[in-house]
Image (cartoon, rainbow over all chains, first blue to last red; front, top):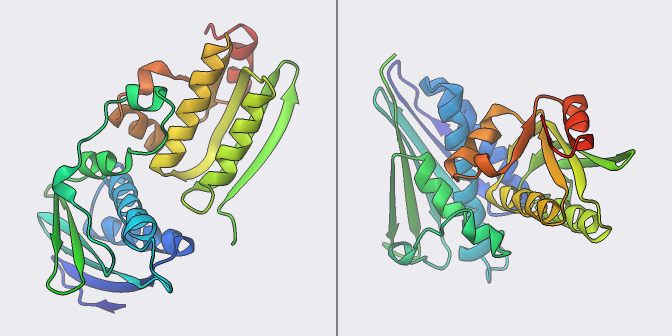
Length: 149
Length: 120
């Protein structure tokens, strides 16, 4: 982990093994930083959920065939008006543009229990952006705007 | 793998109380799904889910909880979420599902409501 904290912002980088058992650690780090940035709890909860869903997707989908599974890099930056979490993986790219959110509750009433992860990521964050490359790296950027205190 | 979730069952008359403590995430959601499927297969249609000691639920967890609530209702029963923290009720709101679910302040209130067939 590296940190660079200033009075009006900060930057933290964390490299975590790409395994489900480290999701709790990722959630702990992100919630602590979101509180440090000054978010109210309702927004801290949304950031926690979005980051968990994003990292779960990396492990389950992008790293599905990887053995051993590479690490996940989290790059968290905040300033007075925005909080950015970059989730960087080295797995199979995902075609983010082809995702169509399911309709709730019809989706789950049909018997499905999956499919809500990306919907929640987009609902909980203000901006999302997915980039592949350069090289074997994918970057999902999640942004939450921060209201001035 | 260390589970992040503890589950406990208690039969209170015709109502099954399922207490969850901890976090429903990718390491524990399969255990939750298995337990809920077992409850459903046993025909338990009146369930109180004590969620007061839950600290996190992921999207799959919301899916399996919603699914059991739906199955209980389809069998003429009810599933009541007792003491669910606001952060989790808020996600049900985001998904547009809160109106179709039943919430109670605590287990005792939920038990009384379940015994009355869901009426407040």
